[in-house]
Picture 1 (cartoon, protein in one colour):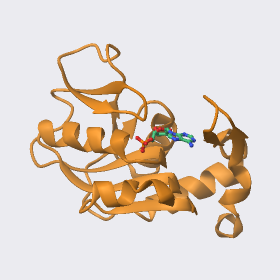
Picture 2 (spheres, rainbow, N blue to C red; picture 1 turned 180 degrees about the vertical axis):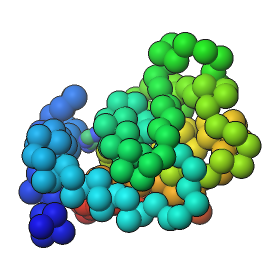
Picture 3 (cartoon, rainbow, N blue to C red; picture 1 turned 180 degrees about the horizontal axis):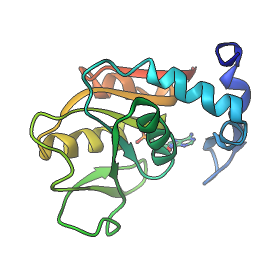
Length: 174
Ligand code: AMP
């Protein structure tokens, strides 16, 4: 039964990746297990209310969960990508990382005005990445109904940063 699966057991800590001091939450064991992956998608789908028009997935691990979730819900998946990857006209948002800056882009015609979307990524840390995706969705006329993550690192304050956007996550770490 998928409800009985402890998803935390499928998330592996990799210390000092990608740099010293960072404990990387590796979700590849979860992806590799059919029952755990299926349970994760089914639990994420419970966070998506009726009336949502599309799932927005953030490159790159957000594509994996976002695409599977969209398919399960019978919705389309809109990619928010790293710079220079989307081929047609884009809007971009620059945002701050712990060290330095990054940028995300969305196709200008990705959503219609008033389209209701849920944003999906593998992990919420400081919330900078998800906030950039939220800004992009709003820039193209979309309405944010919520943001859903597999993993949430509570201590980094992402949930507070995204407020009042409703944040949901499957596995939390203090
Ligand atoms: P943030 O913008 O700080 O919320 O960081 C979230 C983004 O960075 C997500 O796309 C994650 O995939 C990635 N990320 C940040 N910290 C970690 C971590 N400790 N383990 C795995 N991925 C992380």
